[in-house]
Image (cartoon, rainbow, N blue to C red):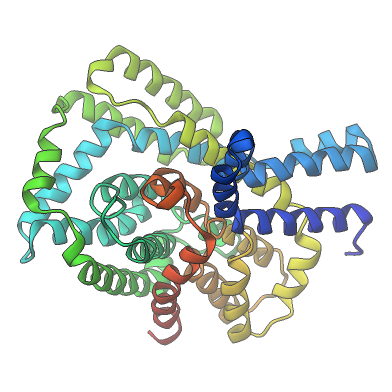
Length: 420
C-alpha cells in the first residue's frame, strides 16, 4: 500500500497520542503547579480522554484534507462494537449485586484455602478472576477484579512500587487469562473465525500455558504484598458494612450479564439488555450502588478513539507483521502490542495470506503476553485504570510505573508460551 499524505498525518497523530498517553502524569502535576488552568490540565491528564481527543483531531484533519464527506464516511465505516460492549459490561459487572455475589464466592473459597484470609482473597482476585475472564470476557473480569482488589491493595499505606507490581500482574493475567476460550480475549477473537480456532484448540494450545503463568504471577505478587494487606477483621468489617442483596435481584443481574456476554457481537441485542438493566436498577434502587456510568463512558471513548486512529495504521503495521519469522514475530508482536492495541495487531495478522501455523501461534502468543505493558495494549486495561487510579499518587497511573510493574509478569507469560 502506497501511503497518502493523510496516512502520514494519521501516523503522526497516532504517535502524538502515544506520547500524550505516556505523559498524562505530567499533566496532573502541572494542574497542581498552575491552579488557574487546573481544569484543562486535569482533562489532558485523563488517560481515557487521550485517544478520543486525538481521534477527533484526525477526523477534523481528514475533513480539511479530503472533505467532510470523506471524513464522515471513514468515521462511520469503523466498527464500534467493542467500545460499546466494554461500556455495557463494565457497568453491569460493577453493579453491587454482581460484585457482592463474586465477593461472596471468593470469600467462601478463601476460607477453605490454607492461607490467611487476606492473602487468599488477594490471590484469588489476581488469579481466579482473570481466568474467569475466559467465560465472562476480559473486560468483565477486569472490572470485577479491580473493584475487589481496590480496598485491599490499591489504597493508602501500600507502597507505590507494590501497587504498580500488582497492577502489572492484574493487567498481564487478564490479558492471558482470556485465552482458555475462543471468544473472551479480543486478540483471539480477531483471528478465531478466520483461522478456525475453537475453544478446545485454545485450551489445548494456549489456555493451560496461560493458566500456569497466571498462577505463578499471582502467587509471587501475593507473597510480596503479604505484609501490606489489611487485617482479616478490617476486611470482614468492610464487607458487613454493605447491606445484603436479595438473591432474586442478584440472579436478574447475573442473567443480564450472561445475556450481554452471550450477544457480545450484536450491539442491538446487548444494548437492549442494557436498557432493561437500567430500568431494573431504577425499580430496585435500594439494592444498588451508584452505577459507574462516567468511568465506563470514558473507557468507551478511549477505545472508540483507538478504533478510529488505529484504522489508519495498517499501511505500516502490516508489512512489519508479515515480514518477520515466527520467533522474531513473537518478539515483534510483544513489543508492538505496547504501542498499539493487541487486537488490532492480530487482526492485521489474520489478513496475511498463507501465514504458517507457527507464525499464527507466535503472533497471538506475543500479542497476549504483552497485553499488560501499557494502558493501550489490551482493551480491558483502560477499565482497570479508570477504576484503580484513585489509589495512586495524584490519582494518576504513570506509564513508566506500569511498564516496570508489568515487565516481570510479562516475562513469565512469554516464557510459558515459548517453553511449555
